Image (spheres, helix red, strand yellow):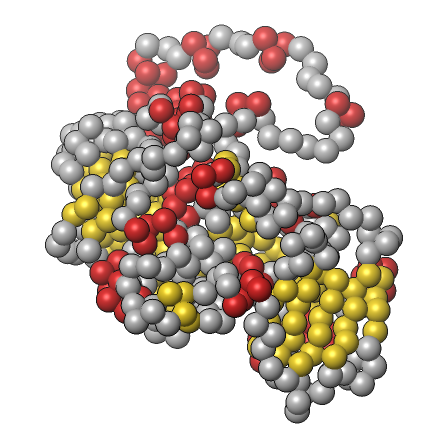
Length: 462
């Protein structure tokens, strides 16, 4: 086993915000959140053994593991005994916030950009703070963004969507036309093909927000593309592909196999119960479950049915995989089985020895997650984690596992298996097939190193 020490990405200060220079704030937690974590997770070092969830938690409680409970019982916690000013006055009226926003104490949990990865601000990447999220749904305000020419706010009354090509009756739809049709609402993940791309070159960026943050999961609402193709009389004998075209200035266009188009692709206007946000393609985008995010064309204006791939600029020059023999692998769309531990993860710090709930996310573009294993010693031994419900096809799955840290150095890893039998590979296994010159489709096992002082950092184990 070879251990390569992680290193900070050398980049302008604007790429690594000032918060990155602080041990815990690097993970997106302000002081209030850090203190809250300490009350919830700080435990005594004495005599806790790893085990099932019930027994581990029972032992932690018996040992007085939660620091706040002991203080309150013995010395009298002023936060319990003394009333706060807010408890003696009227609160703010609903009208003060007609559209809800997060608490001011959560303001450090936000998307962060990486100007070093793009040439102009409009061609930007904004990473989701996975380390601070719960469950599987990404809030609309924290959904990752990848723009090729910035975002626009389009008047839905003026937006049009067209289907043409190998169809019996080409049609143009208004938003009202589409929203009158039978709709579906389904939960799916979306992941950029370049997610975790920097790890190919042994560049270990510091936090899970930057290693895996081009990933989100939402409930999308819209009409199935298969319904629209049927309405237009698509020629399914000659029509083997569809071209999805966006209306933004970059002219984003992507080829999609007809089998995929007829399966679960959605022409969507809704996300998490409300209309799409402008930065997510308002008023209309394509949802292509299990396929890399670049095919989820935003500001969708046209679907063309054809008999061969289009080899557009974004699939002939970009989003292709350079193989070891120098050949470019094209149309590699499916996001393979993958997982990552989000807590604890890079930039965070364990506050004391004892019991911790280790949590993370797993996903696969091929269907449901079947199992997630976790290692605390760099892959020498594995334990099966709990998969929390719901476990949905082509959606994020939350997993948890109990761990008692004894203060020794540790290397945490997760390894997912999907329902088709695909197993998440180690980085050495992936490089043996793909080489070292790739940018896209890195689904290798992620490793987090924990030092005796509790600091967590990004390393590569292979």
